[in-house]
Image (cartoon, rainbow, N blue to C red; front, side, top):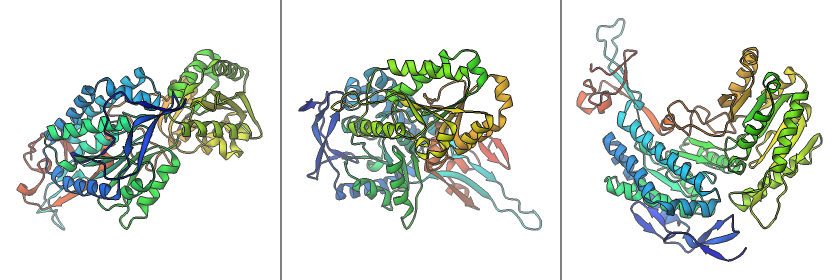
Length: 537
């Protein structure tokens, strides 16, 4: 199809610089409807260098003001953002569907998740114990030297640049978990909108702007910038005002931001979630109890979101046996019956087809179901399934890499030693899954230990797609899954990416933050002399 369609709401296509809409530049671009194969109106203005600098100046000033705000104000702001997203109604969902083809029901669920994330961080900010306050009271009579009064807590890191993901236009985008956790830590945020869903970004950005104004936040608390090229991204990564970066996307783009930030005179942390193969290990005992349920569960996990989840299982390891053959046959039937699905954009669709074709051409790789592109004019990916033995996988670096889309590779291992060798050769991943009986799990502690070094989340007898937003979740992993495996981008612990410890020694009581004052006016949990307590000193 050709021509230009219209998005389902009135849009201005401008950048949001603080509370103002701005369209100073001449360069524009359009969103693209992957389902219909046409551009969408209106055009969106790319941010100029001057607009970027204006957003940075506002953020730098807001950072000073936000450090002084009461936690209740931050919590109110976060909750208000969720209310504004819900108030945007169907316009937000329809815009996201037109730009991503992810489907109305899926996007409504993602909006609910986004709102719940905001509520989670509002509660975290309100309760306040996340600041990890620690107090070592003075010991003036200690020998041989007295101990001074030492108090430590986490403080905001400063303005954060957030780069949204193409595959989660709500939960990992403008008002997603990165933005919410940065706000909860009392940092201003500048979002570089993903060019694949600028209308969705604008609607969410306007919701944040309205919430900021309604709760009397500083003007530079939030800005939204549009851009097709890399100039704006690099300008944000290298500007001294930016103190941290959050990114979800490809290894190439994430690494470019990481390298740019590392070359700064004052390097800053880049929390980038990039690529992940999410290996699944099938132990023999679980296959003896039947292969159909596992094959069907794996198929659904691989095909969820047309394989465009960061936790999609792209590798399956099993010990060669008749039961593994039955499993592979059943999986082949499911994949061959699978229908092509519309992918997020033409570039992702082309990349999927090219990488699957390249993997298929490697010696020792069997194509069980071909992931051909049914129609070159459509942005569709056909489910594909590959098979290889362990020696082929071990010597083929290309098979170790993520193929972003609806496909997976089954690797046959001749024995447990070969399986362990494959596990040792895995790159860092967000997840690793083991299917087995309880007795097998107990006998395979070494394998579990290997996988625990390769992934941030271990799943037993389940599937990796679906990430719970809570207090215990860890969504991160060794490189190249993320640039810093110590941190998560999902769940309450995501807030720790955007805070830094500050220690106060022998400070006057009235100059200490409330969290460190003797009276503990916020009634938070604190570590006092090595003991957790809410009591005052």
